Amino acid sequence: MAARRRPRRRGIDIAPLRAVVIPQLPAPEPLLAVLEGVLDGREPAILPVPADVRSAEHLTTSLGIGEDIDDDVALVVSTSGTTGTPKGAMLTARALIASASATHDRIGGPGTWLLALPAYHVAGLQVMVRSILAGTVPVALDPSFDVADLPRAVDALGPGPRYTSLVAVQVAKALGDPAATAALATLDAVLVGGGPMPGTVAEAAAQAGIRVVRTYGMSETAGGCVYDGVPLDGVRVRLDGGRVVLGGTTLAKGYRHPTDPDPFAEPGWFRTDDVGAVDDSGVLRILGRIDDGIGTGGLTVLPQLVEAALETHPTIADCAVFGVADERLGQRVVAAVVLTPGAAAPTLDEVRTHVERTLEPTAAPREVHVVDELPRRGIGKVDRKELAARYATGA
Image 1 (cartoon, rainbow, N blue to C red):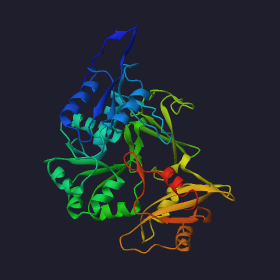
Image 2: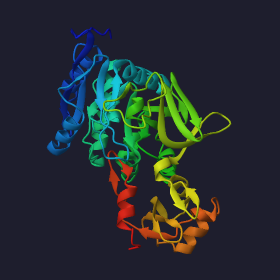
Image 3: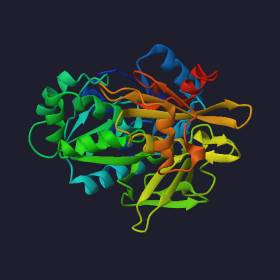
């Protein structure tokens, strides 16, 4: 895909950033045409925005629609992390294509994709970019993810290698329906990102014959850049005091509006807010987010480690761990749990004892709340802030 230069202004290759509204269930062909024009340099950079008017207006105002942007930027992808303020990762065509090509190399070659995530999110956009490189047209499924429609959508992918990209909550939903489970099991790979995947869901998917590939990445890295703990070709990973730092060919150019401190300040690297560890075989494991850490009794507890322990309890199907203010401890560790169908709620003592089998007593929850489902934001990340606000008074 050879890029062609756009006109130069003031001696610099620039053009105004455009907004492209992405419907909840987009028609793949028109969106493919827009993206292909951007990737090969015929069209200026775009900011994909949802059809929701309020969200679209917020993004277009915050990220400078109509203002000039460097010519080598193809997409500006909204990303707010935990701040709620859009920053806009500026992705070049080179980074997007490098990511899509490395994905194909890792999972078995180009194929046809099921688009089941919003196409204004980096995971959905990469389904489109991979399709462009493969010369295929994805089959779109409403991101609300009606599992009754999943078998039809998978069947419509036709012959050859077939893939999809999902979040863990979608996989869990599909596992509750035999026909949907069987449909996913026919795919050559199911990429799962957007946050950690509960161990119970991963185990059930494996038993059903679903080839899950766990991905780690973000808008700033053109989507998933570490698959099953191993960096894609061209991706670099290092740890700085436990913090995960990412670099390589898939890295964004920076933010549309740089932040202070700037995580792109070191040339060629992006400092994430994630804490990780690398085992003896070089596999990266994400332990949690720095800003999710719970300061309790002078120590810091990472919620994801506690969640991993809780998920091994036979009565707990899903959970979220968070901190709330405590006069004595600073914060106390609290858990919200979703029970397995028909299970009785465990007592607090049972939960604490279970966690203390693998973690220090400091990490054991001091409160446990049973919920029907966990609040989520974006494409499926647990909203710990909402839970912390809900249970701030111990209600």
